[in-house]
Amino acid sequence: MLPAIDHKSGVPLYIQVQEGLKALIIKGAYPPGEQLPTVRQLAVELRINSNTVARAYSELERAGIISTHQGRGTFVCGLPEVFEAEVREQQLDVLLEQLLSDAYLLGFQANDVFCRLEKKIKEE
Image (cartoon, rainbow, N blue to C red):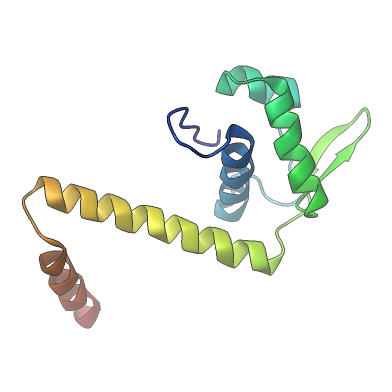
């Protein structure tokens, strides 16, 4: 799996790679101990500069999320709980933004969505 990259976003690419990898790690796409693609491989697959990927990896390593072993590769260490909660909240925000966007396209207003969501929660 690859992190999503949006070249039109105002968010720097290395941050998008960094946050995308964190999200993939939380989802279990890259469990602890799993080897990540090399910097070069990921850069080619994402069609971005390898220095951008190297910077993202460096930030993740500094946070203790990944570990690079010379000659062996880069591996997932795990995710500190602080990052896990942060990324999960970001993922929820993305889901909510998509829900609202889709609802608007169908002609619903935010209040309509809120009422339906509240109703569904009560049914659960």
